Structures are given as structure tokens and as C-alpha cells.
Amino acid sequence: IPQISQVLREHAIGMLTAGMSNRAVAHELNVHFSTISHLQRHFREFGSTSNWPHDRRPCVTTPAQDLHIQHLHLQDHRLRPATGTAAATIGLNNQRISAQTVRHRLREAHLHARHFHRGLNLTAVRRCNRLEWANAHIRWHLALWRGFSSRMNPGFHCTGQMADSVYGVVWVSGLLMSTLWIEWPMEAVGLWYGQAYVMDNEHRCILLMAF
Image (tube, rainbow, N blue to C red; front, top):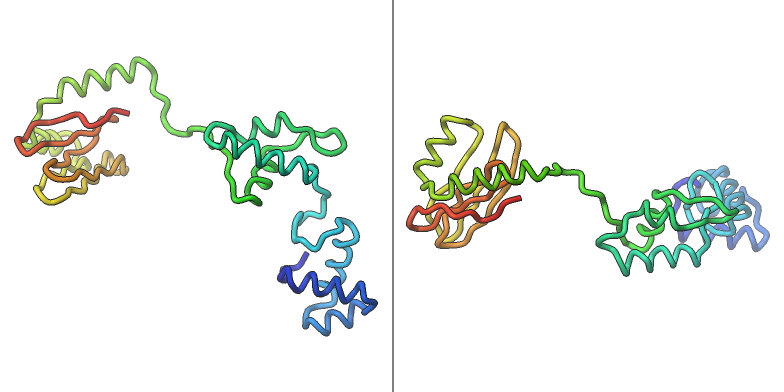
């Protein structure tokens, strides 16, 4: 349907139902004749003035199924993906629905399905290597970190100023890896290979977290 407001669409259908011609309604609402013609055809096919679906295909789910989909994701919104709901739902005419259909139904209720993790999946060996590296460098003070970063990678920046709060931005090979916000009396040092470090006021390195 051409893009006109929902109020105008309902007003146009009301005038058409009252017996006005398409051209008279178009002239009254100051829109093109084809806009009213498309709206009338859409209303006859779907029984609704809604702007959905755009491609004029009938909905593959019933209103009860739409409500059921929304309830499922309200109950398990953190772990339930749209693909799982789509696979378990049989639409009209005994046909499967797509994951995108589920996302559309959720979006109508201002909900969102769980997205699969798209980041780096570390193996057990790599996690072990990162922990070993963290343990080997846990006693480094700020001067060693500054020297190491300037030798190994000019793009690795460490922040260590004393202030009420410290904001550290870490870059590795030109990519933003992490940001840290550490409150007093800690000094931010940075992140390297998945470990976030901070320095205390006695220049002792503390492993904040490892991912």
C-alpha cells in the first residue's frame, strides 16, 4: 500500500463503505487515485487497513499463534532463538513458518529473540594459554607494561594516570578491543589477549577479568 497514515487509510475505507467513489475519496484526501484503489484492493483481500504485509501475501499465522509466539519469548527471552520457535510452529495450510516471521511477530510486540553468539569461541587449549599468560604477567607494574606495549605493538595503549576515575581505551593492531572504567584508587592498565588488568596505587598488577 502506498505510504499514507493509518488514520487516513481508515478514513478512506469509511468513505468507500459509505458509497463514495475512488476518485471522490482521492480528491477529498488529496492523494492519488491509485493510492485509494490499492487501499481498497488490499482491504478486500486481507480485511485490514494495516500496511502489512507489503507483498500482499496472506499471513501464515493466526492471531492466536502470534500471541503464543510472543508469550513463549516473554517466558524465555534470554535463551529462546527465533529459529527454535519457527521450527516448533505450524502455520496456516499446514506450512512451516520462517524465523523472520517469528521476528516480525515479536517486533510487533516490541520484543526480540535471542541472537546466537557471533564472537570468537575459544578452545580449551586457548583458554589455558590465556590463563597461563595472565599468571605470568600478573605481577607486572605500570612501567613494565608501558615498555612492553611500545616494543611489541604501537597500537596497544595503556592508561595509568591517578584521578577520581580512570577511563582506559585499549587498541590492538588498530582494533578497539575493550574499554575499562575503574574507580579510585585503581589505575586502568588495559586488556591483552582477553585479560583485563588494573593497577592499584602501589603499582601492583591485578587481573580484573579474563574472557
